[in-house]
Amino acid sequence: MLTYLARRVLVLLVTLLVASLAIFIVLEVLPGDAALLILGIEAQDDTLAALRTQMGLDRPAALRYLAWIGGLASGTTGISHTYDVPVSQLIGERLTLTVPLALIALLVSTLIAIPLGMFAATRRGRPGDYGVMGFSQIGMAIPNFWFAILSILIFAVALGWFPASGFPGWDAGLGTALWALVLPALSLALPEAAILARVTRTSVLDTLGADYVRTARAKGLAPRRVLWGHVLRNALIPMTTIIGLQFAFLLAGSIVIEAVFALPGVGRLIFQAVSQRDLVVLRDVILLLVTLVVVVNFLVDVAYTAIDPRTRRGS
Amino acid sequence: MSIIADTTRRGWKSQLLRHPNFLIGTVLTGMLILVALVSLVWTPHAFDAVAITQRMQGPSAAHWLGTDHFGRDIATRLMIGASNSIMVGVVAVGIGLVIGVSLGLLAAARGGWVDDLVARGSDVVFAFPAIVSAILITAIFGPGAVNAIIAIGIFNVPVFARVARGAARQVWGQEYARAGLAIGKSPSAVTRDHILPNIAPVLIVQATIQFAVAILAEAALAYLGLGTQPPAPSWGRMLFDAQTFMTLDPKLAILPGLAIALAVLGLNLLGDGLRDALDPRLRTERIG
Image (tube, rainbow over all chains, first blue to last red):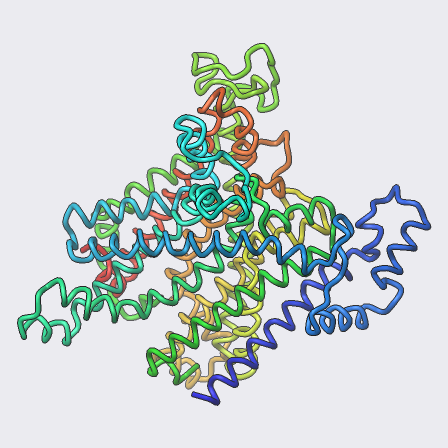
């Protein structure tokens, strides 16, 4: 297990290094003059020169890359051009919205999907099953931002139950803040719930046919206890992988959903950084998202291997 | 994902027809393609014909689905949006298929460090969700349909590389593939004659699913202003415009979303139906 873990950590670090190199090349080497890209062609020569010096563009690209990664490793980030504060501070503020949002969405999606998937599996081939599978197909086809727009139209504009956009901040009180995240979290959760319900159904069906389930039934356990105690626990293994992967999708999805609801999260920051060509912010936020995706996948893999030692071979 | 290498194909057509998923998927996808093809030669109006006096009208004989906030014909814009979506899907999936399948086949045929490189390379590209790579590309080259397509295409490369690699490794484990090598065929000849034909069904199913993913991704990018640029119509952009006016006219927000959902639903159902029919081993997991 230790050798396996060491190898996986090494792969993780190499993946992150290559990813950071890709980000650096696209954002700082491909454009030629990053300062010109940020300020636009109408910029004054002395402004350009000042920005070049501030960004260290007069140094070779390899040195700048090392300075960037070295800075991140020691906890210092660049200064945003538009906000004039360290990028770490910007990202830190935005994470307090995006991470809770993604976690709530993940929770909602799991709470919807597992009962639905189990319900469908235990009624295989009957109307309940077709109903859940139909919901799942429709849920996967609906773009999350369309669902978001419709939910604003219905629950915010027509019924007035929720705010249509914006976030009051955690200082406004936990209830008020959470209330503003209900529609965004639901919009993020719906497509993921649709996928997870399918996976749950399949893995529960797989487990239902196992010998130990027959044994559990044969010794007279109540069907409910067999289902929740034996079937679900074993079916959870493949589902963990999907739930982990979904966290990454939820983070990426938050870019669109935060735009729909005008929420000041990381997704919104990345989007504003593009329109303001704030490359210093952009490279850090993108690397952060990529790191989260890679690390979550890594944790899922390790958890999977810890739960099920059979997967250790061959990986 | 598995392959049909050693299973009988007898009766797969009748299999297909018994699957309601496949039938609904075929009808919806057929309608999407038909509407897109018609829009190339004919639309009810010009897509950019502005008529402010006729803004946000309901359905009528002149405007089947009514008009938008500029008085432009919604049916026309949805039709052109369909051809836009198909174009994005074809190119983005095409990029993924050509590059990804080549890499996957190469990895499976060569093994060793080539295999490792393709697998690790896929990991790196997988770390960039389509929307993130689109943002990266847009930040440098500016927003536009072409850059959005390239971003979605890049995202598709590791998807197809993994699927092709996994399926090809299964076929390489078969006796007939080994026999090909034994009679003196080169690995590339075996790949061409045996591997590729046998993994084609898996690739077709995956391509259908990725087509749906591409349409969703392009819509999201266009919504963010990073995809197709106005005045060219795209479903995602229509939804963005609608958000300002939807309290006055909800159909502006409903129709383009419905178009996206139906297109994606059709392609997903088609992919599911094809998988059930082409891959008997997976069929057992589905509604029987």
